[in-house]
Amino acid sequence: EHLQEMVREFSAFAKMPEVVLTRGQVEPILREAVSVFADSHTAIRWIVRTENVPPVMLDREALGRALANILLNAAEVLAGREDGRVDAVLYARKRKGRVYIEISDNGPGIKPEEQSRMFEPYYSTKRSGTGLGLTIVKSIVSDHHGHIRVKPNEPAGTTFVIELPAARSEA
Image (tube, rainbow, N blue to C red):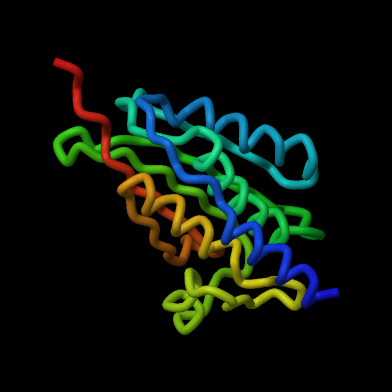
C-alpha cells in the first residue's frame, strides 16, 4: 500500500503541469487554501492575517497546491491536539520587492537534522509519508522564482516561509 502511494505521488510529481505565471494577488489563494482546511479540520484554530501586498507573478493552481501541501502537514501534525493552531501571515517588504507567506503551527516542531533534509525527495518523518509533498512545494516555489525555508516556531512548532518576488510595476 505504501509503495503504491509512493508510485502514485511520484507519478503525479513527474507529470506536474508546467507553471504558467500571470500577474495576480496571493491573498485570495491563501484564504481559499486555509478555508478548505478550516472547514475540514475544525478542531484546529486557523488564523489568516494579511497586509496589503503588491501582486506577484503566479500560477494560481500551482501556488494553491503548494500551500495545501504545507497546510496538510500542519493539520496532520496537529491531529488530536486540543490546542492546535495554524497562523498564516501574508506581508511584503516593499524595499526588497518581496512578498512573504509564513505558515506556522504549534505542533511538536522539527529537529535540526530534519530541518536540513525537509525538502529532499523521499525524506519523510511520517510513517505513511512518501517524502514528496515538500519536494513538490519547493519545486513550485522555485518555478515562481521564489525561495522556501523552514524554521522553528516560538515557543513551539514549525514555520514555513515562502518568499516571492513582487511583480514589476506596469509602466
